[in-house]
Amino acid sequence: MTGTQVTDCKLLMGTFAPSLEVSTLDGKQWRLAEQNPQNYTMVLFYRGWHCPFCQAQLTELDRQLEQFANLGIEAIAISGDTQERARQSQQDWNLKNVRIGYGLSVEDMRCWGLYISKGVYENEPANFNEPAIFMVNPDGILSLAIIGTTPLVRPHFEDLLSGLDYIFKNNYPIRGTEF
Image (cartoon, rainbow, N blue to C red; front, side, top):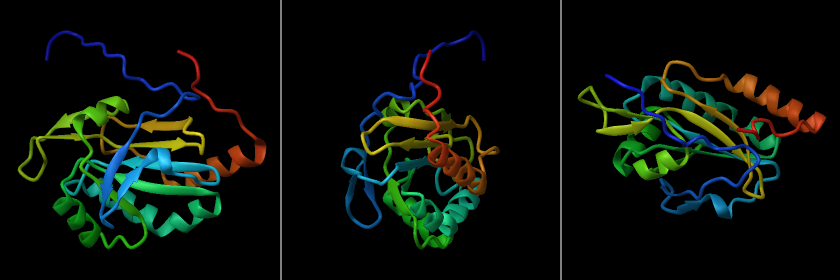
């Protein structure tokens, strides 16, 4: 690789989240604009069925989903996988609770400021997003973002739950609101 490419795709916290609509494995269309959680909608973007780190993360989320619900947080996990690959993830990873969205377009990946990788192994799609977590309040305002460039480093949900509990108990302000 040569040269440096600069793109302007960083989302500013405290502003409206980009629109988002995906199909889910329960046969419905999920729209961010229609969500009405008590505190946040957690949008977790995962790489896809090919990723063992995603398996670990979504399995952990599936086990702790009730703890997020107790904090007033509804969650969805979304990838660019096809319906078939998303269903395979749900089955292979024994996911019982977490809502799974699929078919995220590269355009939406870019709109959300996600890092995109080219598939290099046989079981990887041509292009897929790297992991990220966003918290969106009921008014559609971005409140928190954790954006990864690699599958290897992700927050543990126990740490995230603890931080969110602190935010709610202390009326902690949204950070990351300035360029």
